[in-house]
Image (cartoon, rainbow, N blue to C red; front, top):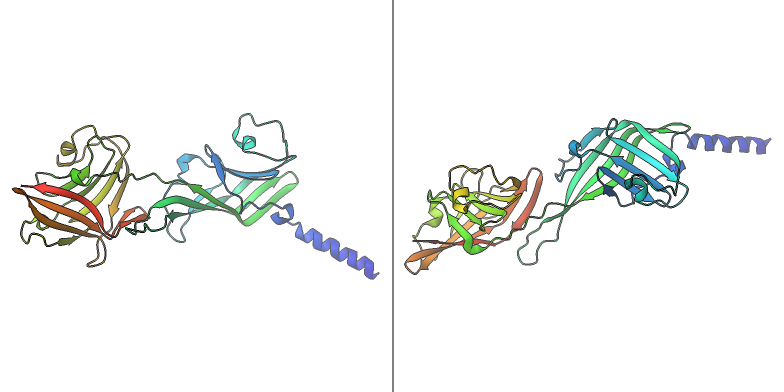
Length: 323
């Protein structure tokens, strides 16, 4: 009799473990590196694959860090789908990305998500600080993907998860060249806009509402400083989709920026803190019959949306010649 009860207890335990628990199916992709083809993000492990189809119009994987505790949320359904497949052999990206998909290996089981939400938390990953300047840059964005209250339709019924961790998907940021030349700095005739941009270039670093005291010819050889702010000494970096085709003077000094070329990225320097960060420093010396203004940026951090990067401890902005 004891043996009979023991067998019954074992059967009950096995039955309870199979009640919608995905681990019994041995499905776990958290440690697998995600890849993509078009609008499909997928993970492959031996003879299994799980993939997420997300239209780019959803802006789910944009290179923008999400605020803490506030992931992007998208609902499963329509053009947004989640699918799990098991195959009768080792699967490759061709089974997901090719049309038509290869005949072999063949899918032996498919689960399709019919309900649930997708939570995406995006963080920026930074380079190590530069040994000389302390500057950092964003080298990639990690998107952590979690399915919430997801309902899979299986061949033998439904399986529901309160939380299923799909894992991380990595994207590459736009490269910001910062290929600027110190002697390209110019001052608009109005005296309130300073810019560094190459002729026919695709980028510019400019200062709006420049404090005129910074270019004063008093106290030659002594550094003058001012803080970057959202109003005075407003420092901005722009990366254009195509090169500026008009003269730099016409682009920057006309009173309003032309609509072309389109701006691909715009980063704004954070307001400065006295003696600590966000400082413009100018040292003026004589240069023949004129003056040379050596302009440095100290402790500047640039920001775009929720993203930031540190420009460096002490960076030469440029050398401006005036009469």
